[in-house]
Image 1 (cartoon, helix red, strand yellow):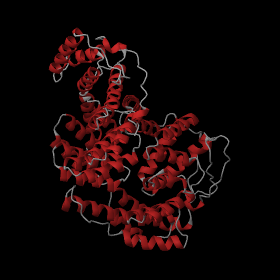
Image 2 (cartoon, one colour; image 1 turned 60 degrees about the vertical axis):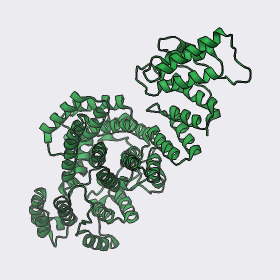
Image 3 (cartoon, rainbow, N blue to C red; image 1 turned 30 degrees about the vertical axis):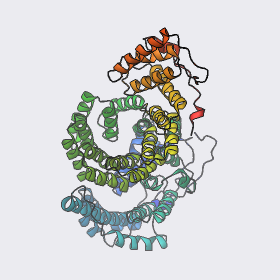
Image 4 (tube, one colour; image 1 turned 180 degrees about the vertical axis):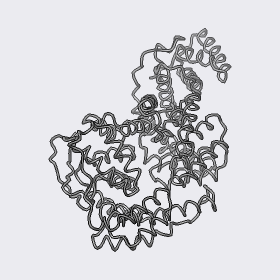
Length: 597
């Protein structure tokens, strides 16, 4: 990846790792493994279990170290020795989630490790009380003003320590979390960047930073440490920002340098393919991941989304039962079961499981969005709006929530509102044809037809997933009596659906053949009109019109009618369409530049 990059030592003595330097490249995987094992131990001692798990999983994907190369434990300072008894007792209380009790016994401790656990216990105690009050008093959909009461006190104390430069990398991380919770985003970003410089091995700080970055421009202005951890961060943030090509390239580079056995990287690649709707590829990777790590629960809700889209009921049922056996009270498990019931059109049960997921973790993004979808299915628009708004509060980059809000306001016949939300979804997914088609429909309702044309054309240009953009563009041209452009769009639509080689029912196929039959009839092109009229006879809704047109064509041919020179007739169906069989070769695209708005 970066074999030519120089090794840049990064001071990490504040974290209790004297003499350890973090390289900028992956030239020494043994040293990287030592660092990962070391940071896994440090984070575990401080109760940062997710960061510890991430480091341990990544270390496990690298070759084992010989005994002589194993990293010795960090040296014990005088302060550590003095606080050892209090820390050991408090950590036991912390591990069983008795946070107030842990903080009580750590009060007055001076060592960095004990002080962090003291402040972190107070923070988690406040979060637990807030979540309990949210669930008990308000229910999962009420937008209450419940706050973590400990945040302001923690901010004051940590701010003093920060100004005195007494915070180590873990302390800076916690200070950043407190600032983020208080919606002080700019200050939080600065503190997290500082934390990555002081302790670049701590994945939690990178991840928190990732959650605060909203676009690529913002990323450019960050002064990040030039270490190998930055590559994992960039790959993750590119996935979050929907920059999937860049993300996949980063992950491929990480695999190439030696992390090919990392289940984390494999799952992130699967998520990336899910985000660009390459469903087959994503399903294949997830299935491989399940074979390698059959008890893994992380990202299985994303896997279930893919099974849902493909309507794979038996596979989704198996996944739901399997996860239930592993851990029925995990958020991901509840979301998988919710998807299973949703696929069976049992929307009330599905919503119940998404609510259960949110009781387990009120900040779990996927559950809010999925619950919004269920309320939409149940025609409960007000509950859907609340669910989608909660999803956006958790993560403003969730295009599905913005899109869902647009759909909800479209049902409520409030086009200006849905235009705003569809625009936000489009900004997050500029190359997603569904967002563009939705925007086009919105502009059409507001009689902004030029903008609607642009959206439909753009949707076709980026790869129309639902094969509807050209039909909508054609109908728009019909409204504006632009018959040539309408015919051109319908022809291209017919070419596309016939040339893909798939046997799929397209609802607008009959509409396209009916218009083209009438168009060629007006141009007095009897062969083309006859071909299209015969195609109309294959559809119930256009059968009678097709037969009537065939009779008229036969009558006019018998009378010796010929095409007039004045009538424009530059468009012809491909020869292969005149036969009854579906063409197998891809027809070369027509020049549609004349209809580009």
